[in-house]
Amino acid sequence: MSALSIAVSGCRSGKQPARSSAYDPAHDIGPLFSDVQLSGIFPDSKEFVDARPRSAPAVVEARYDSARRTPGFVLRAFVDQNFLLPQPAGNGYHSVASQGMVDHINGLWAVLTRPPDSVDARSSLIPLPQPYVVPGGRFREIYYWDSYFTMQGLVQSGRIDLVKNMLDNFAHLIATVGHIPNGNRSYYLTRSQPPYFAAMVGLYARATDTTHALAYLDALEKEYAFWMDGAENVQPGQVYRRVVHMPEGVVLNRYWDDSDEPRPESFRPDVEIGKTVPESLRAGFYRNARATAESGWDFSSRWMRDPRDLRTLETTELIPVDLNSLLYNAERTIAALRSFRHGAGDDEVARRFKRQADARRQAILAMYEPNVGFFFDRRWRTGELVTDRPTLAAAAPLYFGIATTDQGKHVADRLEELFLKPGGFVTTTFASGQQWDAPNGWPPLEWLTIEGVRRYGRADLADKAASRWLNLIQRTYRTTGRMMEKYDVVNVNRKAGGGEYPTQDGFGWTNGVALALCGEPAQTLTCKN
Image (tube, rainbow, N blue to C red; front, side, top):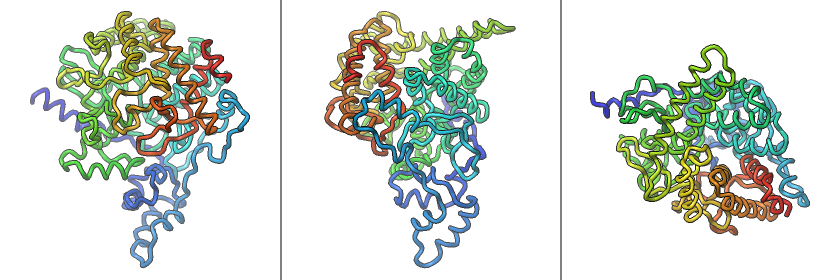
């Protein structure tokens, strides 16, 4: 069998999706699930998967099988009688008109904090043992990569206790389900999100000390093993789940999902688009849609072969520069903690992780195109850089200190030239209508880019971008009393759009990044206005 055919079969085989004792709506209530989701009675598919059956799922399924055959059956009435519908996170909260943005955010932590969960076999929620901050709105659960940016603000607020609680919850998820899922819902178990756990541990260590961070070393290594599953067995030119063994020998990573079904929380849009895809390619489309959700950038022209056609998603074909920067940081963090602990065998393990980090760094440096002065994703089958899709992902090698001094200078120049807009940095240079494209700016990418260029000597650019971003969200807050999930940074008088759901307010990572930027001396005046 050729390397290519092995690689393809490896893509298909994968591991079976993880299951938990939590209620799994897509598989536990039979045809009722798809009937409700495709009926359109809920404009947002997530509402039904977050609903709680009032009886055991099997009882509700049997009741539905009987009731739908009776004359005058009304599906919405049946759902209302048999399910408890969820409420938005922070529902009922109203901002205080006289309150400034910083005070508003500090007051929101209590609104967006969930207490420890109790076990509930009729809920899709995976219970967590410690309090945690949710983003807000339709996002009623913890989200993996959101939490790193939320934590930036919690540190600024002096809420180290909540940072530790959330780290403990993530360590609990790693110990119990084997990884940190997209969010603590049963329907998210087949995927993760950008692996920021090591960055969170680093943030916590800087806020406390390295000794406190040692408590998370085992969890760090177990999560790393999840991302590297299969690395020992794949040969050059082969892939398996999230690992790609490049022809030159280094093992890199891609985004993946262990299921090739429509996403339960986006069931109707996935099925509707899937119907327009040839049946033989449909499972591949669903897998790529899910893998894109694992990237956090769902959706963006970054992931589409044809940037205007969502059906051409090729996420699993790409080696993302930011994902591999995160895993480089994980390798360096594990090596540093092993060296700090200095127990039996620690130094040898530290050296191994340092070697892996060094090899990955060289591969990331090769994702820089000198003729453009920018980092790009790579297609693993051909090795080509995707140079027609510049995105803010290029800031990740700066944020994590991977780029050379010369590369950092040129990337910062391109970011200023192509991406800096009146409201901050725009996500991509392409307006596809997808939410992770122009004209939108997103808090996590603003933070990575601002702090990335600052690390490479461009404090002037960092301060300029931070001022523009903070002015935009300040003005929006004064007008609406809300902190939004994303913003239009090109036309600062227009509300951000795109995506599968309305722009949400709350909002965890916006609050975190705003407070962290307000803590920088150059932004003191901006944040007081």
